[in-house]
Length: 120
Image (cartoon, rainbow, N blue to C red; front, side, top):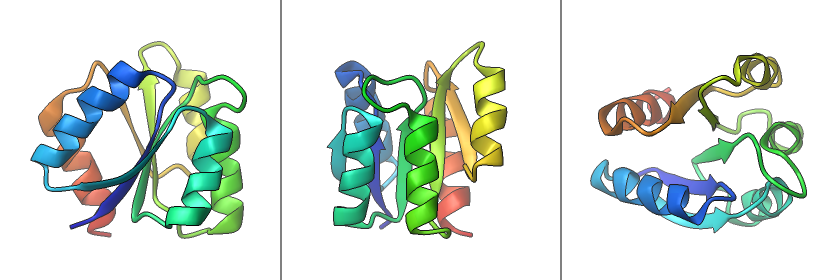
């Protein structure tokens, strides 16, 4: 069972994503509400996969992604975005994001995307 760290400033989004991931047989080992906290928890927990929102206070998801990839080039990070953030998604992919999923979540798509990443 792959371990996941969820990083999102929206408690509601984390709650919904947690339910989806648990139904997909992923183990949630941590949550963070901003990019800085996400980076610290990544280093502490060493999850198999990180789900990372892009727009967050204190430190956004793209900066956190860069720090995580600098610490571990093999880290698997899936960015979460709302519709209309194409430019930010392109930037995230250039910085090493493995994939992205959009809100609102499509359960089958989320699980398939994360399984594809963890099976690499």
